[in-house]
Length: 191
Image (cartoon, rainbow, N blue to C red):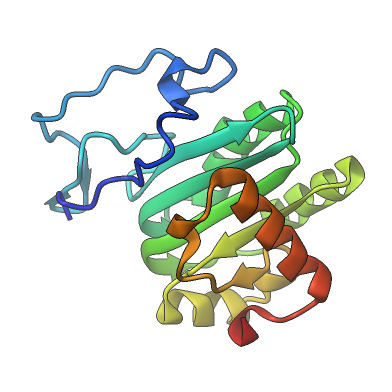
């Protein structure tokens, strides 16, 4: 797991630790000291901690003019034991929503497991985004995590989309592509 780095091809456009509006502003990273773990596995030091012991993230882009952001996730999304959605919502999403972000793209291809524990925070977040005229989606969640997500009916609040080539897009083009996919009403499995 230590070789899985956050996507870095957009760093010429945005760096979260240099963004004064970001909750990760001012963080300093070491390329050589591996101190964070998901269970017993060290992870690359560029991933950001936000309150969960099993899930990490990296804000790849926050565009305040267009009001969208892309976040890449790594680890185990565990609402049952760690209440990860609460930490995500309170420590990350709400901070950016206060700055005008209302469109969220969560890249979940490095989420290895998902464990549900209710819909409250998902419902609350969707209601807040709807009031703002926004939305949130999760891209490329693994098959096993997608199944649990769908069984818990969380995809009603956070739609699951499949877009394997997301890295080939420029940030704004990815945002527009996801918006078009949502507007088309296609379920994630048919994309």
